[in-house]
Image (cartoon, rainbow, N blue to C red):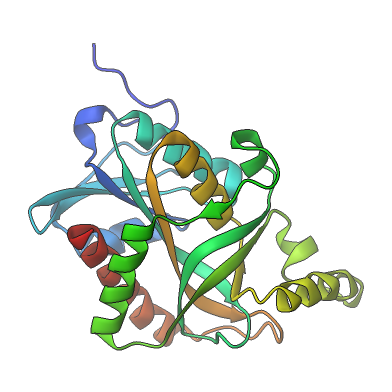
Length: 245
């Protein structure tokens, strides 16, 4: 009997050796448009997966929703099925000098999340895979799009550490922003450090490429048309990097 992954519901023969990990399940159909012979696989708990071909290589893409815990589950299950290279493609808050619409490449990340600590002790470096990072840099240069590389900060509390809904929350979040700026981080999100840490401990190669869709200081958002165009570019860049790396 073929074993399937507990949550994503896929079997070993369903997945490729490389994968894109994304938050929004709606992106899976949009990623599928960049693959040849895409096949939507089992969907469980909103975890939607597609496998297709890119340059003759089988690539899987799975949506994990939001947050480090479920992102780590998806990576861990895909690793158990044989996937060894991962690129997170998603969105992040851009911090100056990075801006809205910039492609943001994580060289590493500050782990302020809880899930990373279940894979490695505090102080363990959340570092992106060098070769995947180099391939992403080459793909970014080729596309001639605005991009930044540097360190991310990963936090669990979106409305308590990243995005203020009230004046009282803004006071608390301003302290986080001060730390982010003092440390020279280019972006914040909820998953990058988790995935970099979990992947390295498991023995996978992991990188993270995000689109800056929210200004981390003003909370201004990238408009829908620009987001759609840049998102398609992000998928192409990540898939080109997987093919090259």
